[in-house]
Amino acid sequence: MSNLDRQAALSVCGGRGFVVAEPVRELLTPRHVQLGESTEVRRLLPNLGRRMVGAWAFVDHYGPDDIAGEPGMQVPPHPHMGLQTVSWLHDGEVLHRDSLGSLRTIRPRELGLMTSGRAISHSEESPKSHARFLHGAQLWVALPDAHRHVEPHFQHHTELPTVTAPGLTATLILGELDGATSPGTAYTPIVGADLSLDAGAEARLPLDPDFEYAVLSMSGRAEVDGVPVLPGSMLYLGCGRAELPLRADTDAGLMLLGGEPFEEEIVMWWNFIGRSHEEIAQARSDWAVGARFGEVHGYDGGRLAAPELPPVALKPRGRVR
Image (cartoon, rainbow, N blue to C red; front, side, top):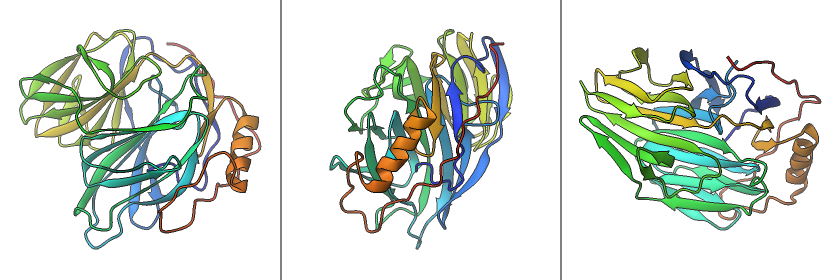
């Protein structure tokens, strides 16, 4: 899923204004956003006071939703620029189509990684014949200025490396963790990992002290550095950690997100990441007239119209602490 919010806010993110240079335990409350008739997401990033974690700029958690007899996910063709989308499932399937001609079915714990670069459009939908439950996360990674105009491309990786410890399996989605490297293309120092914990497990996950981190709870009951994190919530952890204590009361699923703090200020609106209000306005205009973003073939329905763009952007204020 992408950002279908018809009241999309224009925001300035990135820079080091809100980066916490020491370990913290900051529990983020999600904002509930209705996408279509059958899907509600819990939006964790951007969040009030917490815009990014490393290069991770957008995090939606959805499900588990019972979609038996329902169409499930139906996201019409829409544009992206300046970012990568990461599709990650625990249950169900998502059919991805894009303006490059890609057609892939993404299944649980497979990486669907779309690099928009200068411009791309895509659609996402549940296949007509689909599993009963749909549960996953949609995430964006901001591209640094040196790479944000790369040629768009799509990667689908069905086999990903894992890191294991007693009671813990970490599947590496993006970047590096404990000597393992994801096959997905990354443009900044980053990590994304899916953590499966057995009931009663206690583990310590090695981290990079130069990264800032957050943990999203997908399912079950777990504690992250002593803090209970319920499904659909996210704990921001700051920087300066060499390891992360984890404990599970039940079988639990978590996502570890981290990376070097993103130095550049970015402007994010709807499904675009740019560097100025003018650049965002041009992208919206290009999508409206059918230029630049290409065409998605095969989706049964029309493309998504862009919402109205706010006239000005307000810069957040913050400091390294």
